[in-house]
Structure formats: C-alpha cells, structure tokens
Amino acid sequence: MKRVITYGTFDLLHYGHINILRRAKELGDYLVVVLSTDEFNWNEKQKKCYFTYEQRKMLLEAIRYVDLVVPEENWEQKRTDVHKYDIDTFVMGDDWVGKFDFLKEEGVEVVYLPRTPEISTTQIKKDLNK
Ligand code: C2G
Image 1: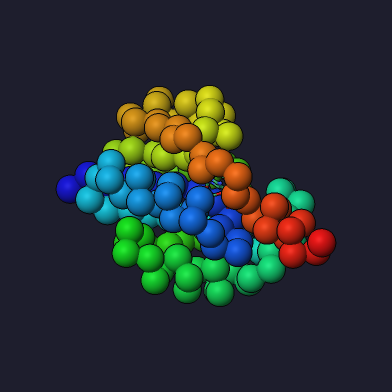
Image 2: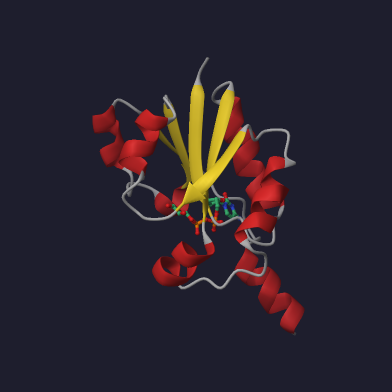
C-alpha cells in the first residue's frame, strides 16, 4: 500500500487542483491531502479564502482521488506528518520545486508535478471582478 501526501489551500476548487490530485493518486494507493486552515492561510500565506476550511474539506472529500483530509496549521508539520501518516511519496506542483527536498531525509520520495497552465484561484477572482 503506497501512501501519498500533498498540501494546499484548494480554495474555489478548479480543474488544476483536480489534475494534481489525480496525478498524485496515480503515484500510489492512498492519498492524504493536508488542507491549509483559515488561520494558516491568513497568517502565513496572506490568503483570504472564499470558502471556509470546513467547506474546502467537504469539497475535497467528495473527490474520488482523495482518501483523507487533515489540517495544515504550520510550515513545520510536514517533517512529522510523513511519519504520522506513514507516507512513501510527497507531491506538490512545481511552483514549489526544491522547497521541500529536505523531506528526502525522512525517507520520503519528493515529486514536483507541472502545474496546470492558465488556471488559478487568483485568476478566477480577477476574471469575476472584471
Ligand atoms: N496547482 C496546480 N495547477 C494550478 C493551480 C494549483 O497544479 N493551476 C497545484 C499547486 O501547485 C499545489 C496544489 O495545486 O500543489 C494546491 O494549490 P494551492 O491551493 O494554491 O496551494 P498552495 O497555496 O500552493 O499551498 O505547505 C504547502 C502549501 O500549503 C501549498
């Protein structure tokens, strides 16, 4: 049973998010999504989410590729999360390339996948505000 983990805000869920979740799940049998809490988003990523944590969690749990959704509360928890959830592979979009290579020291495969072009939550908000 190969276990995969990924992190994110996943606000205004869109096909770019689905693409990374689908590809992440293809790398194993079980996918853990660590979802940024509203506080973490605001304090650490200056992101004001349209949907609350509970709403974003419910949306993710409805996706066939996702097996478990748990909260992301700080930048440091990745090092312990990979042991807590017995993870084999860590996956992020390549906008994060290199940022999490330290997880290899924890015996985890680190994979950065190409982002889906032309779609982002920020772009959706901009387009809707026109
Ligand atoms: N993503 C993608 N293609 C897009 C948009 C997003 O592949 N067009 C990927 C991102 O690379 C990321 C995931 O979808 O792997 C979630 O993106 P965000 O919700 O923007 O997450 P982010 O703010 O990058 O949070 O500790 C890590 C952070 O929590 C990551």
